[in-house]
Image 1 (cartoon, rainbow, N blue to C red):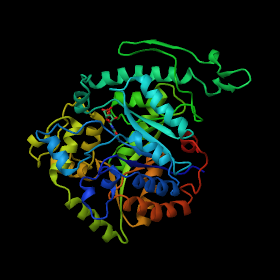
Image 2: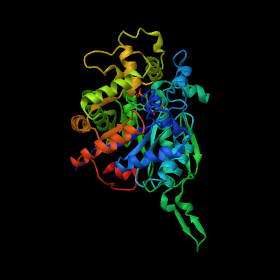
Image 3: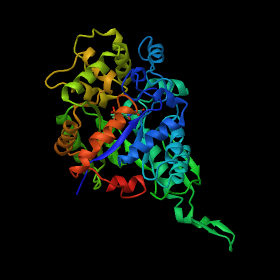
Image 4: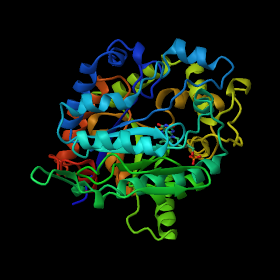
Length: 434
Ligand SMILES: Cc1cc2nc3c(=O)[nH]c(=O)nc-3n(C[C@H](O)[C@H](O)[C@H](O)COP(=O)(O)O)c2cc1C
């Protein structure tokens, strides 16, 4: 029987998505900047809840699109400092056996040869538990930090198509069973089975033998999150799974339908599995949950939300009247996320203030507020009505909100037969597919 799949979203910074989470008295994530024990504790909790994986969202630079943006981000600890999530995977994998690890790596800044090597090394060390969230970097600051020129919105995806082609060729060129390790014959790798990749494209080239063999899951699982027309085409072409953000159940259902149609158009039979980001806020009673949500929201200054939203659109929203509707601004950054934000309130566009508050709290994700029972029911309804494959859960306060979900919501879903009670496989690909 099909069941709901879950990943836990995390960011290697003092907060994940909720601004000012670090300032809540029971939040421990800031300690995680220097503490492997914090991440190992999370990994064990998340595996005990039978989630498919952890999903590390990441951008490389500090948002500097508001006039004083970098300063605001620093002062508010708004995903700042921001460390490299690759470093956490061996730490978390060492205390788990089944949990998968999705990690974001941009097609800007790291040549595909090195991406295949870094991801492949981790995939081998974890026994096939790595997924790659392929991003093309919508944040202008990432390019300025790397000394690169940002390509236009659609052209970034054209370049990324070439990037993926090189990765596929490198993965296919070194099958796992090319390693024979025959002591008698003194042959470690059967050199006839490893091929040289020769690729010359418009944007990228690679002439090399791959240096990492395939893992037990073949190649790393591919996640993607492009939501514009060109972004969806890229995602349906390459991704095993899509991480999407839609603020309402109706837009979620529309998104899943669009992905099915786009997959059909390119003749893809195994369409990508869609995961929607959601942020639960749990309380003993509905009133308690609503009060908790309000307390958390009240602790977030408007600048924090504006900063996030400006970074996503690539335009300084500080210059706009906060009480006028957010416009459909022409952006070279994330067109998909802007469209989702404009659709967050039924029948009208949100004001800049409403959108900023939403972004400050949940990065624009749908929130589910209520008792564990109510949240389980909402998740089931969203899953059934949208046709999605599962959800990426974004925490509020860490680790308490992660523990609350694992201990209070997961058992209800398991009792209803909507979630697995044990893992089906030891690879990310294996668990995602069952
Ligand atoms: C749910 C979601 C999560 C995303 N996470 C990241 C991320 O962690 N890092 C990043 O650089 N971009 C991230 N993005 C941005 C997308 O990868 C993409 O570059 C951006 O949305 C622009 O493409 P689009 O206009 O096709 O949507 C995310 C987008 C969505 C919708």
